[in-house]
Length: 141
Image 1 (spheres, rainbow, N blue to C red):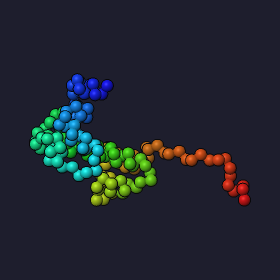
Image 2: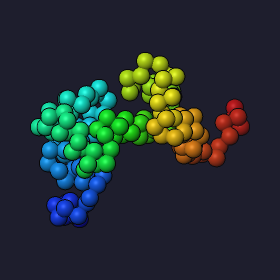
Image 3: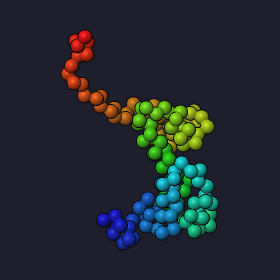
Image 4: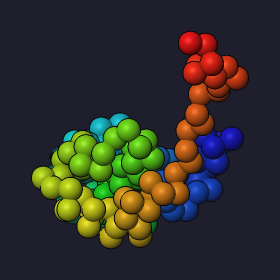
């Protein structure tokens, strides 16, 4: 269904419109697959087979955002998924995404996602506790 909609040119803007564009698709796939890579505009433009200015202009027109802003939002979305795992510290997640300090990551995360890492953790569903057997280990002494 999605392929049909994209092939028919019925998607006007956003990620699907970008994926429907063969040049932008190459850059978007790179961004999504290797989001931890420190991408630069010229590198993404080369993947798309366009000049920097043509890539930036076309990306903005088709996707509706600048390439670097889109990438920052995608990275923070991925970071949010990691933050929901309470076994990982915020510092670990920050390091995973190349931040030199937890404080810098917290500021960037809040600016981009609209809430801090702590709020994400508070709202994340808790993993259920393992089922108990119904046997009190203190009684079997």
